Image (cartoon, rainbow, N blue to C red):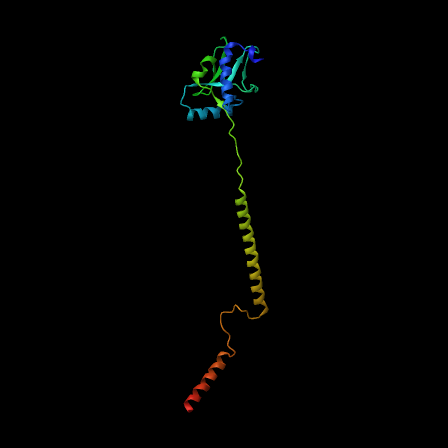
Length: 196
């Protein structure tokens, strides 16, 4: 239906929807019990306003049915017990913040009651900068190089122990004499001194 053909009574309601869209938000539509429970829980924790809040729903007199402003299908309802014989012209839906039930009400008082809107929160992926990537690559490369060098040194050390060769890493100096031979040489030197 073209906008000019809408009844004058719905214009204030459309003004709310346009204002919500201009702020980057849409009037809310609720499609299942989980969404309704989530909204109710959030409102009970954070909402300090009146007990009834405007949903993004209005009564379309052409179809004789309630519709969401975002044109999504009406897949879930949670109406409180109300009389059905009331005049529904200029009727909107409100969420009762204490019970989670919906009720029908006059659209003209919606600006006093408050409007429930939804907005997508932009999610920006943050990648590492080029400097962080370079530093990470250098740390990984250094770790790999040190690990390989350590393995090579360990391999050469083990190989030299197995071959029986003395290594330059030996801590104790080797004498050409064994202990018995050194003792005999020392005794001979002692006799030489006494004879003089």
